[in-house]
Length: 361
Ligand code: ATP
Image (cartoon, rainbow, N blue to C red; front, side):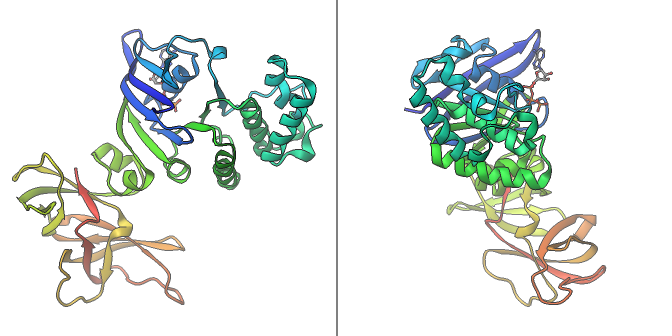
């Protein structure tokens, strides 16, 4: 049985539907992320999991129990907000101890539990400080420790790192992964930052306009987006107009990509010959060579010309023009010794990619 079952949940504000029939199962111990642009409904869904809002339709089950209308304080669920929401007049230790005091834990057990949490978030030395004497990252660690101190079944995190600068955010991401592994509490994390979602999560639900567009592990969401929205939202992607020419029995097909010619690609159920769509592919899956006599079986292979080079230090992005003014972005590591840039403007190049490097949308 899943720890959390969201079944066909709908939430309306007046005649606006913020969450429109969402179903998600989250397993115990999972780090699960709701990812999507501003206004897609992820915070509204999280607020329903916390009990701050009630669904207009559908159910939320926790450990098999319907908690859809159970008030927040009666759920074994805590939320960490972007704004920390610490008590400013209490020390770090008292902030963390607060939920246990409310639950009337005996003093010795309470102190031992707070000590353990202080250690988990590496703040043992800071127990006597007040929130204003801490950095942003340390304050967020106190907020997380306080939310975990009575071992909830579910910890909800609403953009908890977005107030921190980029370097600190990356450090906190590593700490969050370690902390979640250590305490084993199930995390449901909300963010609009794709990089953060890919780095942290066991699984991601990509949301748009109140619905889940794709739910999968980060690697699949990134490499095989199942529609145009996901392909465009997550990272850089080539999205090329294409048409299915033939379907083969072995899970592959032949597609014609505008300006590039015909090539093999992965097929899936429900496709038909003649169907038009988009072929999506990540820039780092493309290879460029100066000269490449002959092709490799299962690889797309055609010619182009470098139109622009964007040197980014670790990688260079080459914008390559193929037939009919179609442009393809290829990202190549600058791993060779020396200045390492491989091509210049106007260089003729041979373009290749493996048949399973992209997906037909
Ligand atoms: P963000 O990242 O900007 O917080 P989000 O994906 O979390 O976006 P929600 O906060 O869930 O989005 O909001 C979804 C939609 O519902 C938005 O259009 C928002 O304006 C609307 N909405 C949210 N709460 C209310 C409310 N209490 N009354 C009316 N509309 C609301």
